[in-house]
Length: 285
Image (cartoon, rainbow, N blue to C red; front, side, top):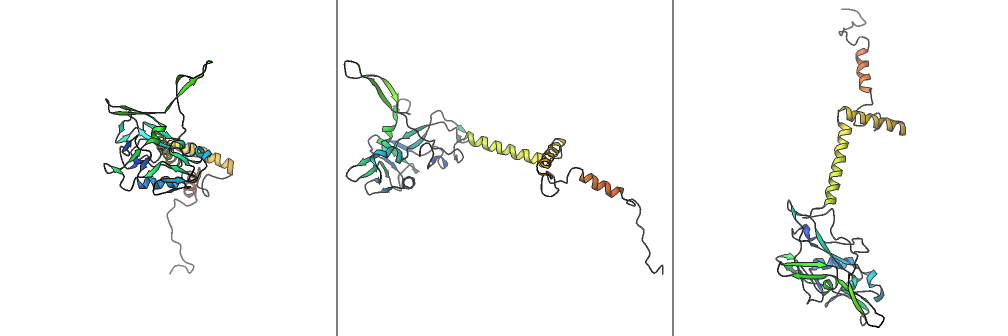
């Protein structure tokens, strides 16, 4: 993500109906992904390189929040349902800001990235998997519902305090931390997910195509009237019939041309008379 613009995304839903298996581990200091996902992440951050012990990047300590992208992860919500094998798309988006996974090392004079390569076999149940460690827990409020076997995700909360006249501070409430992230889901390349935007685009495109076929090729009086109006408007604008040469809209001849041609053939002198063979110049033999 680069300011609310999607810079790069990976949709696990394209090949997996339920997405990628993910482990939430507060005892891990990093985010662990498979080798293919890790290489794609490096491509989205050109100043970074893989080390034996992790990932480092060229950076300035004062501009980490603007030089690095936020990471947005879409989790399928419990309210999602299936439509002919496609999920409805209801989700919760987790936003991980740069400050949660980037730290500056004064000795190396480089930034350390808490995203590591888990190896080519970093899989669970034979599917590409992820381990979300402390960078994720710094960015999200996580609630474990053991009884209902659910995990609740939300924006992290920070205390709101006031300073009384006598000194000290008093906490008066909690407020959510804000993190601006783009939606990681691609509305056109949906895979196993239902996309209302894609449905609207397809329906509108189909309706426009059907309207064109009807107006351009239908012999109905309504279509003919629309073609006449279109040809008249085109003649007023461009001084000629709509279409190449003298062809009108729909590939037919201009208005009245067919009637004039047929009428001229039947009205010509001798058109209905029988054929008479004429003798040659030398006379009859």
